[in-house]
Length: 440
Image (cartoon, rainbow, N blue to C red; front, side):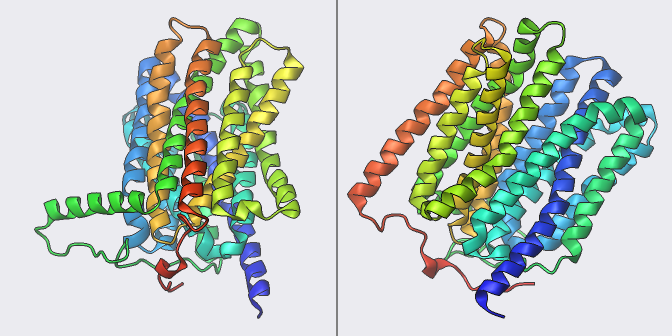
């Protein structure tokens, strides 16, 4: 079989995998709606609902911190399967438990779903170049974003309907089935996942022995510092990603407040329509990327994908600020479409750029990305909630998303100037450091 034919076959298998992972994403968003509603109705406390969400985000931060180690020390396919089966089992137990037992299980559910879903995301994104080949990375990332868009829209749309129609127990069973389906697809598809490795950064090896806890922690810290220093530009745009997550909290928290102010008769309808159109934009992002690639292969170049990520981030932040500007309904939906397009565009370009780094370095970057996204979103929600007590939603969004735009522009200028001074070969991923990979 020729290399091109083999690559096309792997991409076709990856499409089938995306069907499974999209089912898990659907389960996650359906679960998000059902669990948040259940927590609030069971406890009657907005504070306890917030604590539940914070626990899940905190578990995601922890999973991101250790995600790089997991990509190196453990075989990826079994871990991915176990992550989905773990979530399916957790939700199955929750579905079959009585009301009081369910309430007692909520902290466990928050921690497990946060840990397992984030670990799964880190492993999958870092494995894409091995699964489809470097030449198909952008297409594969586009498929993942497209699947996420469809699953997000269906999960949010089905959440309220299914809870009202079936009740919480059957909905938890549906989500458990979605995760079980994803685990099955991961287990049976003949994709070439990389095996674990004995070292993370060339020239390093993990400490051995049972009494090396302090040494192990120092070694892990040195590895993280080494990974960040090895690709400084990626480290800087990782900081943009973290601030972007913090800024995104302003529209997540502010949208219900704003909708209540301008459409008090049906605020849920306003929010639902906005994010439905946003999901359409997210879905269309892959098509936009494909159109750009038909005209130029520039996005395959790491430097251009960095700049494309910066442009998309600025456009997305500007669109979300405009959404709070009091414009009419048709224009709000146009803004939502632009925000979704830019969101999907930045996801594809950022993921593609990190995947240009040699494995296993990219596994660490994706772990740090997950930590930054969960941590930034959690801190941003606290900050946005506090600011909304004294400011209008557009002011909160303007300040928080404005910080994102400012940082992104500074980074773009800095990266461009730095590359011009260093020459065209600066910070290109070095093929020589890519280890020989054994596959399963």
